[in-house]
Image (cartoon, rainbow, N blue to C red):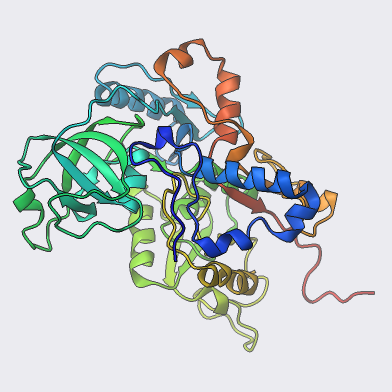
Length: 440
């Protein structure tokens, strides 16, 4: 069912092109509208370029400062000290975004091509591998295979099983794998595969990752929230004001919910909905961690949030009467195919297209960081300019090392951070009249 990925079984820096999609997707993408807008050859070139970019991490790690508890400059100073320790004295710049004042950008160094591969190996799942390329350590549940002689304290080469072919507990694996870097094993092979369900901690601490990104595991947890750049833009576009009542329809894990509350100075009310109890629990945990008290989270299906057959509000709980909120944020469920890095895709075409009906059912902005909407989407030029589309393929992939930052201008690095991020789009709707008003 799956097409052969065009990855070399070494490291993501050596990949010239990548097809993360199953074979049937090639007949669906690029869409006919895009081909008509750009021409077949250019549409296919854009598509292949996009796929290649999706297999690499963005050029910057983005964190949002919780301005409810501390100033950006104070947190920036604390973070600089933390990164200095993480990177063994290496001085990596931290940039404050000029248009998103509560956002800090840390450049990603890599791909590093001088890492010596070890005889002792560990294989991790594709999702775990993606996280490692963004700066994470390897946690025990993500380890699929380990060399039979691996002991605690060994230097281990870590690889990602991008096709999901490695058997759990295998002692060796010769299939397609992508090199992620080296680390030090916290446990022996026996300790990892002893069958105990409580084994959930760090299994391998990455010391020489292919892409050098900071780890934010328990780093300034009340002051920082790790988010992709477009996700931080969303709440600024929403522009919540103190004292307002805001609804976040599909809120988990609460990144945008807590951002809304912080921008409102925790004054007002933020209602967060999600239909899974464990996700609602996560929203509440994040609100508590960040010291935000204006957030109320409910386990509720967002498609049923509107109550039309009642004359009385349900005591501030869902469902809600029409026009109960000043602003509404909808980050609708989607496939997440724009996430980076994304080196493997198990979606079927049927699964991918199943999101459209749900999104419809749920159904000029500032700051304008992204580009215009995609041609061929059936929108007018004015409507395209009202969208914000983040397309990582508009800039060429490039190697980043510490020397390149010493010579780069800050405005050039900000421009790169705005472009080389995950795939994303934002649309803002402004209500023109009340539901009770009638057309003339």
